[in-house]
Length: 345
Image (cartoon, rainbow, N blue to C red; front, side, top):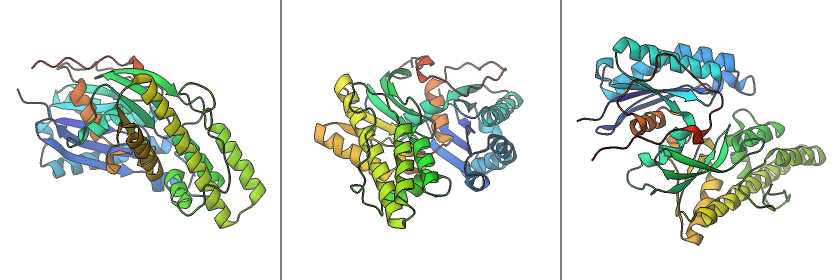
């Protein structure tokens, strides 16, 4: 029996994405349209504008994906869509579009958890894949979590942020430094020109046991430092470097604790912040020092994309259609997901 050709739609925030994937044919298309320019003038994502732009762009992105793959809609066997977590209007736009398309084509549709897509995305690299069980460090604009992946679809929360997610902390700190949206990459570029040792900043919650995170206090420390030091460009670069190093050190310390507590060898790092070069370098050094292994998704798959949704759907699909009623969730705990279906040999 051949595996289904999956059309996936991702619209959880400010990327409109469509992908085509099957286990037999591999990656056929992965189209992403970024709304950065739309939101830049507002200094952040405007949910209503995001939802309207998804609706405007989806037909064109779908057509691009089909043309790149050399397929037509009649070739599709399954449609997958992001059902959460994310912005409710943006999620509903993509989910409604995908569910209506599936109904019109008389094929099944499946709802996918956005963060499970990120968590599984490193598995798309067939040349170097982590082995179960493993740890996942999910770092994005809305999430900072350490998860134990005990089996396909079986996740345990080890620790999470108690306030700002790491990507959110990067964006807010970048705004304090006068950097444009999106702030994370801009701050990382500025940090590359700075001296991280000039301003000692705390490594939040590393002086107590556990694997939870907190970044709001670190952001406040940066604000006070900026007010004290003024607007000298080199000083701003040094502050950016100190902030980034504090965040990276904190993530490394907590990941080390996850390795120690679980005894697992492999660590998967996923989400938009997994593209940060300083974080990649530091975690690779820590893994090498401890005889562990760390895996990152390709840079093209660090941000939101539909290919990761298609891949997660390939693992989750059990041959049945989902209900016609559409449910999307702004918040959705990964540990609420059922295990993946057992595949017959």
